[in-house]
Amino acid sequence: MKVLLHGGISNTNFGDLLFADLFYKKACSVFGEENTYFWEHWRWGISDFFRKEINYTKSLPDGFDKQADLLVYISGGYFGETDRTVRDTVKRYLRYCGLGKKFLRRKKKLAILGVSGGPLSYCILRFAMCRFVKYANVVYVRDEETKDYFTRCGCNPKNIVVTTDTAHVIRSDDLPKLDECVENDLIRTFGSSKIIFLHVHQLLYVDNVYHKSIIPALNHFLRENPDYGVIVGGDEVFPINNPHFKALNTLACDKVYLYRYNSAWQLCSLLNHVDLIITPKLHVGIVGAALGKSVLSFPYHIHKIKRYYRQIGEEDRCVLLKDITESVAYDKLIKYCSIPITVNDSFRDLAQKNLNALEELAAKL
Image 1: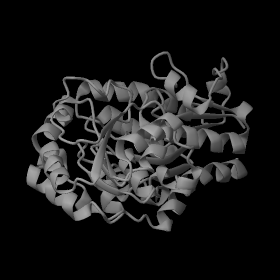
Image 2: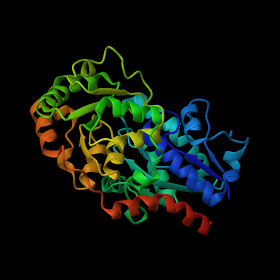
Image 3: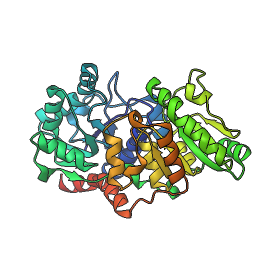
Image 4: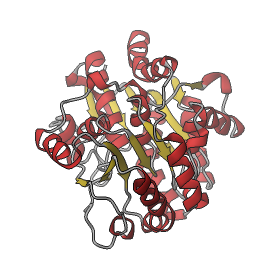
């Protein structure tokens, strides 16, 4: 059986790369490496960064998309919108819907495994995504809100199974050893100090809120708790030491290490070395939770991240960036700095279900 994988594979993003690697390895073990490919497109195909990380050296054979028996939409948040602009809608439609429509026309098999979705403001994208959900042989979504959204859009709730985020399968024993140079740097910088991972983002809006509210709260916390140091890092490739980052320029701490992201699995290993994580995005927080770390989430995305912390019973750790103040951020630091998240084993089982669906599909098809 020939299988085509598709998802958010054209970037350097941490969470999407973890998904690509996990699903590719599982698909190869089930269907064979010679029968498993990622979709390729001149603009939105698999990125060179992803290729290097997962050791994917193949090129999609001519006509493989026509020969493929199964299209798998791997985990990710792309069944919902990033913003409500026409530009984002058109980009999302071209990136994700064209291939799915071809499989529908050819009456080929389709699986949706561990996505989140909604809202979708424009009918062209909403109609296309709903068609996929209605048509697919298997539909696993990672939260109840996604199921509710597509049910309200006319999809049959009996065909939609709620699992959880696939990144919950990650355990510390599965991680590679942290790069020796980085590990030595951490020892030199922090010694026996506790470590905070401060996740920064290149969006100007995020940097402004960090500068106004989160960094002052963190500086206050650090003055009172000098046994902590700070790793500053991102989860995409961008210049972390950009002098225009106001947040970074106002961080007051004697023990600071700038971490330059160049590998998703190495970032996982780094997170395994820290005590507290402050993040505006989803998967740094999920991996931190899966590894038993304390996590504070201050997201700029108003939908999917709140859903996650609500799902695991830790909604109090999550405050939207638009609502954060210095006092709220400081209170959260004091309250949760020494309280790790414990992920229930049932979440790991549900996450594994997203991957095991490939075995079930192979047995049926």
